[in-house]
Length: 179
Image (cartoon, rainbow, N blue to C red):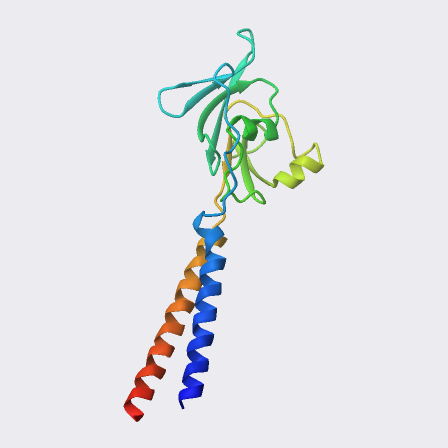
């Protein structure tokens, strides 16, 4: 029984080590460096998370809400004619945990009964086709959701490590009782 126990324990140690190594990027140890920063001369912050972005004092600005997993979420007053991708860049770009495959864009549409229409856009679509990188209207809302995959992987790695620990402990106790 001892060689089997030793082999199980070694396998458990190897699996636990691999699980911990795989969890390093998830915990943020291997995240990329600084995100894009907003220049002070282009953007000034007012009262909490309200930002004004313009290059000239004569620019007409429109209110846009950019929420979620971006560097600077909040109310942004951006130049009239700003496109979807530019607005996300103005908000500092998506953070590492952002789900860039399904960004929500709520736009007021006078033709709709509800008054607004929600589009799901990916950054890849907006980069590839101009129809997805549309010009924003006043009071548009962009919501960049967080990608929960890393949290789920970390959760299941934790459960797996716990189960392996319980099994190894049970084998140790069983081996000790047989002596």
